[in-house]
Image 1: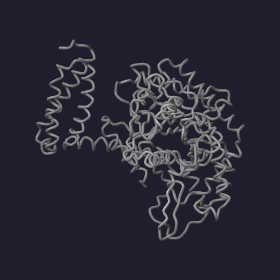
Image 2: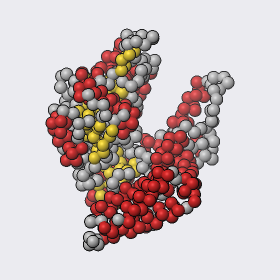
Image 3: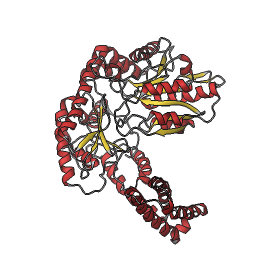
Amino acid sequence: MAARTPAREAAAAKIKALSSTVAASSSSSAAKRTLSTADESLLITTLRMLATFDNAKNAIFALVLYRLVSARAFALLLKTPAAKRKVKRELDTAMAEVEAKIVPRPSHLEIHRDLPQLGKEAEWIRAELAKLQTMEAGVDSKVVEAEWQNRDGQMVWKGGKVSGAVYHGGDDLSELLADSIKQFLVSNPLHPDVFPGVRKMEAEIVSMVLRMYNAPPEAVGATSSGGTESILLSCLAMREWAKATKGIKEPELIVSVSAHAAFDKAGQYFGIKVHHIPVDPITRKVQVGRVARAINSNTIGLVGSAPNFPDGVIDDIPNLAKLAKRHNILLHVDCCLGSFLVPFLEKAGYETEPFDFRLDGVTSISCDTHKYGFGPKGLSTILYRNAELRRFQYYVKTDWPGGVYATPTLSGSRPGSLIAGTWAAMMKMGDSGYTQSCRDIVGASKEIHTRIEREIPELFVLGKPIVSVIAFGSAASNISIYDVGDHMSKKGWHMNGLGGDIPAIHIAVTRLTIPVVSEFISDLKQAVKVARSTFSGKKGSMATLYGLGSGVSATAIVGQLATRFIDTLYLI
């Protein structure tokens, strides 16, 4: 028999406890009524597997077995009526908190369930829009009109306490964008013969972004509705390319666990199997060696991030590019977050890492213009090394009774007004404007990074972020980083909770963050002190639904919580 070790004994204790729970559940009449024959058979097999534990040769086997068995056993337990009732109670409690935060019902705002019998006057509409613009999530529903009138009209996000989300280029630029959008309000790129000016602006946007990313002369691109659509299009193009050139019918994509969730959405939408590769626990970059081992005959492409959303770290794009070239597969680099920062790092005087088309293996790049490009929300770009690759994202139908139907992206009609607004932003900012913006934003990010490391020893920064996102966790066993996040929320900060291998929260620095860096550090120090003094060992209430949610004890029901969260968005 193998010698006992602390890890082995801990695993043994977990497995024995799980065994008792499963055994009790499987013997209950409720479980027998709920579980299928196959499930009961699986439970018996599970218990037999558990019985073999004492003959296991090492603790690794035990830990792996525990993870596999516990996940499945817990899923089976959730089928029992008692468990279902408990889950419903927890969900109802969590959703009550979410609804209170997301769906405020201030008394000074009317609720409109039906069309007004008579159309409202323009002045009334403008006044109502002003109220909606300054509406805050989580405001007490008993707030009265007088309280609203006493407000200074300041939007919450303008205070600089929101992580990412709002990429504001300044009031003057916003006014210019509003004028540009108004001028092209009815335009639609689906009809280039009717709106030739919109077609021209769109082509110029793509051209300018291509050159930012050092694309070769034959490189091309398109605009999309946002980063998610750009990623979807890149995956669609990969799938269709692999089908046409390699005959691959069961496509597989290899991504980092830190890659954007839109790649998993693409996998679900387009029937692509997605393999998730862990990041290095220290550098937070995807483990390239494990990427290499995951490549097989069905692999259509690889994905790297510059930077990734959770940690703000740029993956090892050069070695991913070499792998892609060696195996004749595609490599997409997601720069949606890095957007108009990473191309300007070097010009701004900061260190950078290779990530763009100068690496021969990079075949496509996604870049949002509506983030650090300061364009209006709802526009992104997808770039390809050549026109052949771009054609794989097109849709063309020639035998439709309505005529030939052909679109470059997932959408048919598109708002030309957003193209006009984006073009105006890029022309106004220029190369020098974006360089200075990068210098200011990344400078603020580096100050936060440095001050956390020097002034708050209870926290540590994940990896070596060099752009705008700083993720940090707790270095102290008596401080929950999620409690820190909760206390920052009480101070008015909108932070992002991270649900990866290391509990952490992050801040994505924007131009609005720059003047409040010292306030952020001061509040963070205080939040750490409060979190330590109130530590109970329980998980904080900060959940990880893209930085927003409510605490529940069992991670198996987070998916249900997320679904119900989306339902909440449409409550009146």
